[in-house]
Length: 576
DNA sequence: GCCGTTTTCGGCCCGACTGTTTTCAGTCG
Image 1 (spheres, rainbow, N blue to C red):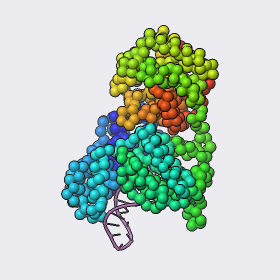
Image 2: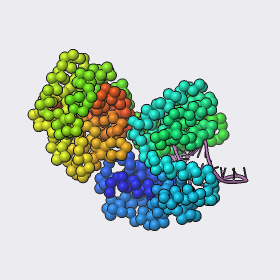
Image 3: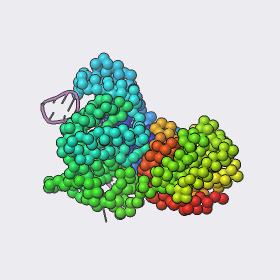
Image 4: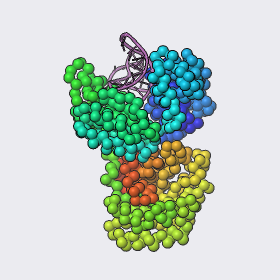
């Protein structure tokens, strides 16, 4: 069993317990455990083998025993017993927006419905409206939610898809008279790799006009709810968007409340309670009934709690609150720290622009040096370079350096295939001619864990390989990538000085945040590259920087922040 | 079911909005 399977079963158990009407805190314990394993970044089997399951936040003796049972027997008796009580198909019904555990149980108990198909039929026949607490309106709403689910599904969208939509909506809301601030919140502000829905936050004295504009935006398909401070819409793409509007004096509490993930926020509110306040998006309210305290800035919120300011990208309850207490938060890498891009393609392989065009565009971006890393021969679909063509390209690289140097430097590089059999695409003497060698996987990603890990290890252990690009090869939101043993990969990278990439393309963001954090904790250096195939792609860099921040990465961990000499010195020291 | 400068037992955040209700339950974030 893999992490994903354990996560899946714990989440299902939580839903089943909720439908059964179990105690809420027990349910939350299963959800919290699932979340914790999902963001663990390590193979749960390895953690189990080390006897360290209970060191995972939210895993106690009971859940550790359940995980052990799953990992050793492949099943869980508790789950199977529960499934007899609460059919898994009921859990499936909860995916319908607006349908929670109570309603599902009621529908099941009173109408004998236990599948989505039966539910749809009952709604169409007008049977749901007869239930207590239901009416014609609820029934119609449920029916359209079922249809929306079948059209759009309920999967999360990649950060790169949600981002421009949110910016476009913000631009429109900023035009509304009386609006003083407008920003994204939620997982989008935390720059999580995938986004469930978009949160927009606006400061304005009167919400009325903002709401009017919001619900009339072109992208909006349906208005799901609308009140004096909050509105929720669904876009044509199926993506949900929430808008909150409060006066500017409450901006700090508003932003704080709608940025942190659930666990981060709960901890902040618990801290506030211990200090005698109830904390909400509106204010700190003294429990003894005194006047409420407003915060116009987030800094004000954190300082009142005795904490250093926590950057949005860290607000995931992964130790940042504890670090903020002791003022030991890392100084995170920023976009401005980046001075190079070490992974890009030209028309020699599957890029669209010439060597000179890419180099000039990079220089205009303010970069000091770049590596041209066209694909190698065996990736035929990307017009990979034979040894002969690789050497021909070197002529153009030299020309570019003659024209653009000496303050700008183009490195002669490759993105070399790690073939399905584990061999590398160029022989060592060819690699030796190059300034910078990337190795990466594009094929055989679904090989068994041991096999694909061995392939990667053999590349890392080749002294000519300087960096591994997009290690797992995942493509968001649906292709999970290779099942690498990241403990082994990171250990090998640390031992050989091999750089691991955070690929900034929002379809990749690979390394993902938790693996970047594991890597730097083991002393592995990180690169943040765009994998540009055209000049516009350089604009994706901020997604990579944000992912690095989510991994607690500082500027000194990232080779792209180094001057050229320091970088060249580092890769030459680790060659052979 | 987890967890501990409140506790090994008894806590475990805060609010908006809807549709159905005459005061609130359910869902969502």
